[in-house]
Image (cartoon, one colour):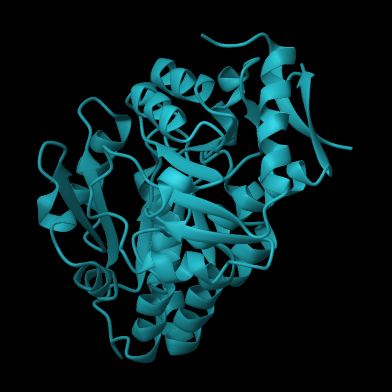
Length: 352
């Protein structure tokens, strides 16, 4: 049973005080199903360990029973039973939740959020419904490049193909009834410069059954890729494309894009936009992207890869969650009950 807001804040503050007394405190990042078990490479452990300081240490999937801070992901299903089991096994730990798919499955996502101490939505534009009196919003935490670790991308930088096939990659899962699926069919018929690849929702092993290096090698065969939202969401696809050195082509209806990748950075990468749902404008953008990739050559590939390696890897997002909780434990942020047009009535972290 959830505690009243004042008691809930007091209980979270009690555990924050315990965390503040640890030096370093131990954080564990644990992705939850149903995201493919092979999505996150084990080598991410090195990326997370590198984010450690004298104030905290971060591990990947190990030590959750004795961790001071447990950071979990949510991808749609209701995982509250698993959360409560974690609380029973480690009652003094703080529980943070990173919602990867809060643009879908609203009821399950809200249930998951209520079971956490802190929550971090990936999609700001559709996060107001998550506000509640039981867990504190820790801030917007967008998607990132997570299916490859930094060392694998850096190795690819050193030996990327000198030439790439002159087509734009557009590989997507077939979600029945989604407007994106119909648009991809139109693209397949009308724009030969775009290589449309569709995975059935029921079996994604054709891609996710392959080793991580093989997946990256497939992306490296192309100089550009297409970013289409399922709703209006900014997905991992944008950051995976950058990791492959691609010139990006993105639909102009991705709400959080300019907040995460500022327009000045978009111009430098470059990232091209087209009018969502407009085949003619996408055809124009595809030709422009391929021309830019040819002009930029290896220097452009390195520029885009270095951008994601410096700013948008999974370790950067996990580090932000750890920093946010550490700042709260240190008294730089406080849990407050707030209400406003953007976040809705609920607990939030606010500066002192």
